[in-house]
Length: 307
Length: 312
Image 1 (cartoon, rainbow over the protein chains, first blue to last red):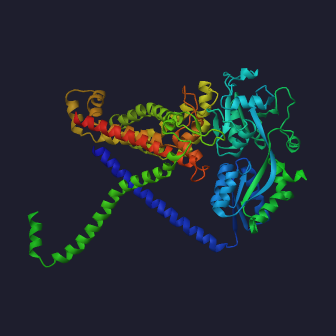
Image 2: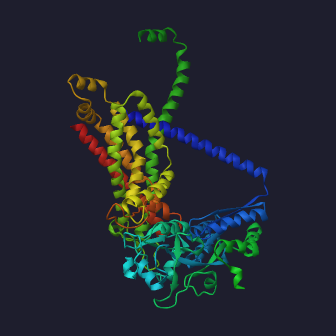
Image 3: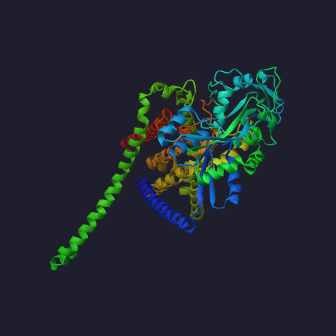
């Protein structure tokens, strides 16, 4: 038992050391921050959080905006549209990005928590693409077939049921790649493909748009959905028809824009109340030509193309 | 001893002053030590109280049913039509991955502890111990990263599985993470066995293996069990690595190559989105309570097992 007791002793010493270290870190961290604030008082920080679909674009905006307005620091983080909106309601961020509309209960909660209305800016459009591995011979799929693959109680679990044999793949079972439930992409897919029914359990729920495409690119028998801006050479986007037999439409900029493509959606950013000062200038810049050009370069359809 | 007592008696006038400062200082230190001793209890109770308080409102929700929560496999916390909170698949995921990890880690951990403490020379012993401690210092996110990239590719190419992030991947990663803990604690336990035992066994003509098997393992039983259980605790509670390496699919695994989701990974992935005060938020805290009770049960059984061993 002495062995165990020395171990316990070691552990307490270790945890004590850890505590001291943490305290030190916090202390120095605080100091540093206040020093920085003293040095450059005029720097304002804008916090943007939310959609994983938009996180790459928002990052590019932040970098470019630094050149336009050097005194404004834009900090970007992902987590999912739901996470961003929840943070906006708590008041911890300035701008929430979302790949879905705000829900009624979220709008009400916003009013209740802050007394302000959430303000919506539509900043662009995106097509939700259905991805398969590049070796998959399939080129198009209907919404019904997708629902049968992804929804609870849907009967399609094997590629042979769709009449597809994937060359070089040992298995026939469809590997479904989905998103975590805080994702706006997840909710959009559930609403428009599954008609608000639930997903079949057992799908691989990835934590980001990029991860979905990556897993599909590594897995010959996989099928998944993600923003159209995330395509890589190892995956293929499927054309989508609303019913089997009807003409299918590919996720291109024109088709997204004309709403011919069934899974086109608008992209939003939200603020609490009418934005002012640096936040307003930032949003105006996003909606201006340079901001929209960055959106287009990242594979999305600019909002200004509508006019 | 007598001399000291004598000197005290010789100078009686100086005693009260010194004693006052000394007593006050001693009392203070005693108080601090006592507080830090009790603080563990306070912290555990406070954590349990907080987690349970956040979980409590779910019992009054219409969508909630305790039996279904424990034994239903359907986890649909954000469903638009039919919200269901069944954590059975997650519990099975946690238990199966811990079991697999221990299946790999315990033989390796004990074996390496026995080797370090009984079979290898002093130089090798030092370097091995340092390297194993280094292994313990690798952050769990880095382990998860290894699982996601290196291990997953290896599993695909060796087994031909369609997806490399699965039960096997998570189990191996968790095993690698718990081996250092098991090794260092079991090595301590083996070291604590008095040398006279070894000498006696040697004198009776026992071989090295006989000493280990017949003398050391029975003598160090308690410490070894403690080592294994700390490993189990590490495996049950691990979050980041399993989140990345297991594939995050809600289902009861039918084989080593199925993806699973664990209770911890589920909380980590979903707590950020659940708005404070919603059913989903409360149910995630209840999953925390479930996890707490699970580890509590493991520790308690361990305690009983150790006591049982002692009585014999």
